[in-house]
Length: 285
Image 1 (cartoon, rainbow, N blue to C red):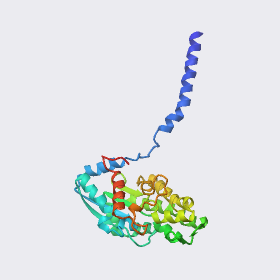
Image 2: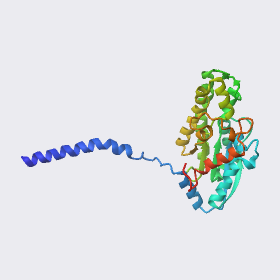
Image 3: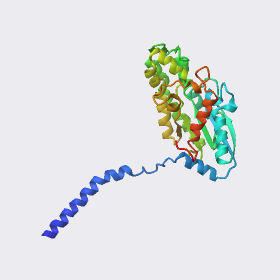
Image 4: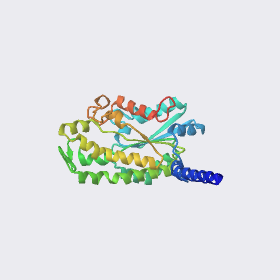
């Protein structure tokens, strides 16, 4: 009788452990079919192990990657190419598709879908950099002074959300098109979360709208970038807090040209340094 009682207690204890630990075990188990995202350093190592001595870097984006005001040779894209050559002992050919023309995210989706030369460059790329987003917003808020969705200290949130909400699908579609051409496990794909130009920070401070607009005119679509990147196994280069400071209210004049919109040479070097940390063995993201 004592033995039976002891065995019964043992069975109850085992069942208790099983049922209370099962959710934990299942919660820690990978979802069937889901591929774990590699560290960007792992990706760059795998690319290097293929043995190609000439790499292709493809850049997409707005006037920042074009190097407007400082020249393409001083753009962070070109500086990144130099870093790749220095760090990995390869020759890098830059295919800079960025444009100074206003092209929203949806416009980039169409460009990637329909431009066969660009598509071929993306297929052959070892590294892809992306910097965009403000071309959607600037026409609607002006260059810090006002636009259809923003007049000095008056913000039309419905108008602004009508601009930023579609950017979620835009980033999803863009990254879907890119990863269909360039496997993220075989290509280092980097998208920056950009930051707020100093001109905007200064004007929004002046008009008392900084806290509202840094969220509604920027951080909402920054969130779209981060979510879309995660969904497509693309790496986010976190430039926001570096550019705008830990309280995200700095104008970063030391990194800007006199227009308060575009980076000077020092700014481009800073951007390149932040990108380099994504692959450099001597740095950590």
